[in-house]
Image 1 (cartoon, helix red, strand yellow):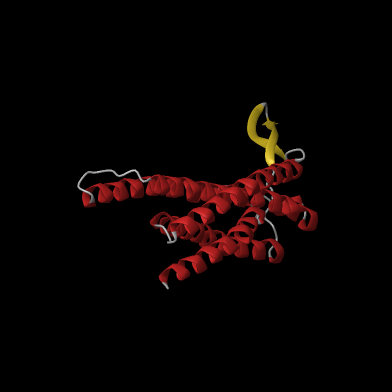
Image 2 (cartoon, rainbow, N blue to C red; image 1 turned 90 degrees about the vertical axis):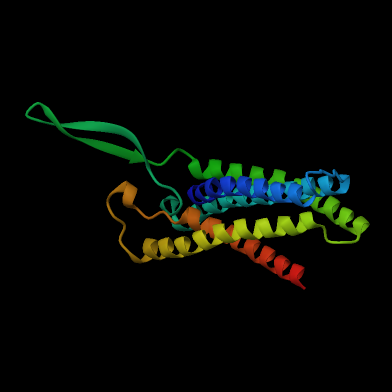
Length: 218
């Protein structure tokens, strides 16, 4: 999960900073007074859980899709070999170099498939439950809440960054994988499965939030 890990590690401090700035602006506009509206707190909870459920669903889908790719283009499309042993090479009684042996982790594609299916199966009921509750709350209030606008904007930013990174990387690595000869070094080999699976999963999510954001502008 290199791409997602890198993006999330970058966005988490930015999100925390944004919450601090937003909280400061809120307190300034309300002259330091905090009004706990239960509907607002409930909406914040619902959209946070929807966001986490979608993110979990997406990560699980990446695991499952990356694993499935091995059925079509081999395990080398999605996974890299890891060192399993080292054999020293002696010349005149001295160690001149170390020859490492590499192998794929046993059943790594099966474990990723099980992990992915589990995350998808668990996140879907959570997502549906909180989406239903959010729609019910919106009907009662009769307006689009500011929490929903923040949720759509934040989701659009996150998933657009994930998509704009994973899509070109996935296309580039896939073309290299099929059109160019793979280098001999294990660490230099092209392994496009993760980037392709990430793009395949999150680009449609980005499109959905892009269209949702456009609706808010009307």
